[in-house]
Structure formats: structure tokens, C-alpha cells
Image (tube, rainbow, N blue to C red; front, side, top):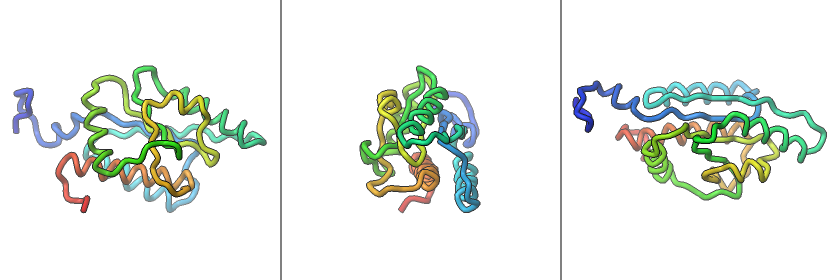
Length: 171
């Protein structure tokens, strides 16, 4: 096949033109069911683009506010100035799966930095994390455990890649 750059490339080389994504999550997946689901979607996403998962240590502070502050600082330490930061937050904007696919198209076209999705801990994000966000995304109107939110995010990223690459998955 020939891509728009006029260079002969294989299908898989064209697919990997998509930029890498980074998920930055508070804590590790503790239950085997979440770990298995995460591993499955990480492997599936690997067909389309590189995915880096960074887990920052969850805080053991006494108060919820202090815990969120510490975790927020740890999340922010992982992103660079040029990164496109998407914060999953209950105050964010709703997106459909097709909206997410279009968002990833625009993020790839941006041509700088890495698109980073920040998943907070059980007490959510601080105002400082929200201020750093280039986009606030409400994954659901429901309250989800942060481990489940991470798996749902990965499934939606996989679904968006299937839409972008015309792979039958989304109905």
C-alpha cells in the first residue's frame, strides 16, 4: 500500500503512525479481574498504537483532601508541558465513542507531545489537576470505582481505534 506521503508501507506500519497514548493512574489494579481486563485491552490496543501505563503510588494520608492533593502532585509530575492532558473527572464533558475517535484524530494531527489520560484515585482530582487539563472528560454520569474507570477507559480507547481503522467492533 502507499500512504499519503507517497512512501510504500505495510498495513501495520500505517496503523502504527498513530501517536502513543499514556494512561497515568493512581494506584495499581488490585483485583485480578481488573488486571485481566486491563491486560486484554492493552494487548488489543497494541494493534493500533503504543500504550504506556504509568501507575503512581496512592497516598496514605489521613484526610481525603490531603490524599487527593498528594496523588494529584504525583499525577502532574508525570506529564510534560507539551503533552495533551485529558483528565477523567465528573465535572468534564461527555463524549460518545465516535467523539473519542474524532478527538484522537485531532490529537494525533496536533503533532506534539503525548496524549495523556489521567485517572484519579477514589477521592478524585484536585483543582490543580483540573487546571492542567487540556480537556476534562466525564467518562460516565455514574460514580465508578477508579479501577473500573481505568478498564472502561481502555475499552473505549480500543473501540475508538476500531472506529478510526474501520475494524468491526463498534455496533
